[in-house]
Image (cartoon, rainbow, N blue to C red):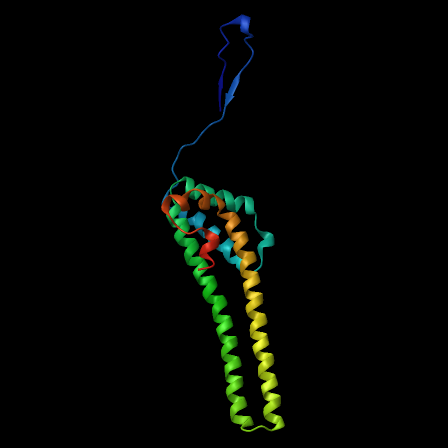
Length: 179
């Protein structure tokens, strides 16, 4: 901090007033610091997607994202977010595909076991209906959770959405999670 007293030589203006100006550091963030900052944001995104967001400080995360954009590391941030969202969506999609395969293998077993219109075949068909219902339930649950996590992620990167995204003609973070 610096103390400036513009009136110290003028007794008529009250020589005891001081103007305090804050110390400003104008150092640019280096790539190593930017990568470390992004890694903390990426792990926070993973925690959000794992439904463990209660331990996170969204103010600190927002500030880290703000600083990355402010220090001209918006591309690193945007590309990293895109990569993390892709990983998350593939993981969610993989779970749903595995469930769908389980349903499909259950239907194949019904055809082999049932064969005709007997009661055993009808019981297995009812079971298939339950498996399909389970798939729809899981899909609905995954979609609801994804929308909630995307709102949290969007809130962290709001500054990037307002500044970097329009300048570079990119998709906003929330939209990235939908494509």
